[in-house]
Length: 265
Image (cartoon, rainbow, N blue to C red; front, side, top):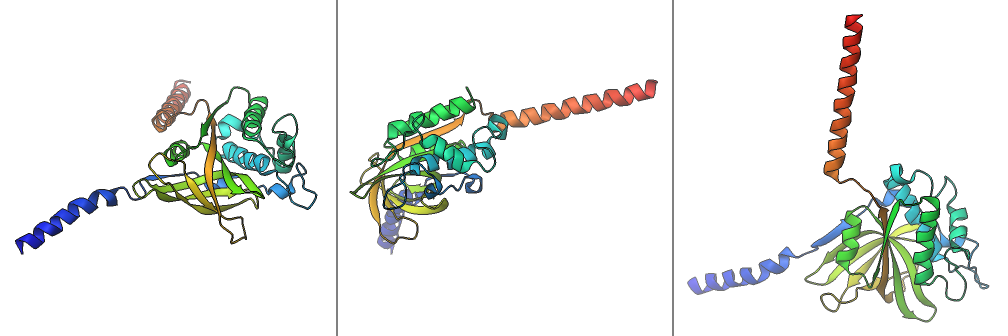
């Protein structure tokens, strides 16, 4: 009996650490604040056989809508005016920004530089942009926790579908098992979807099992690029709390002075 208990105790010691790591990387943003632009609604990069390669501009617009709603004091309606999603998408896809053209669509360099240029043109000095080559789950989660918008470029070995941009809304990842789930707004229909994640080794590139909306086919790919935007000056929660208390104290002082002025008249 004693030997059995020792064996059970040993098993518990071995299993407990692994269980503690289950989905240890978690983060997300409010998907209801995202834009829902469908890339097929854009006029840029239309294909002769139908459809478009404008996933880059569409993903950026969906991100910009989120930034405006998440940080209204920083952006207001500067990035995407009400009802202006399609117009902004066509502007982003044009030569002055992302230069989205067939057969390659939007290269990463054009996507990132075009997006940052548009942000600077519409809201000068407001945004801090960051990019990452082959971002890991921890990098994605770190920016989602800050409330940032995060876009990624997926790479595939399929000749007819080599790459695709999406806007990330949530990640849940088990760093011990090296598996997880990614949620995102897909510009193929402008809606939120999810895909499985995996990695062959700790720190290795993150693989993704992606499906197009309404298509059961699984495309095995990788997250090959990542970008994130955030207002350059975002007060921490403690700072917001102090500001609220300060405004409350100032309001109380003003009300007190008004009452005193009335009493002394």
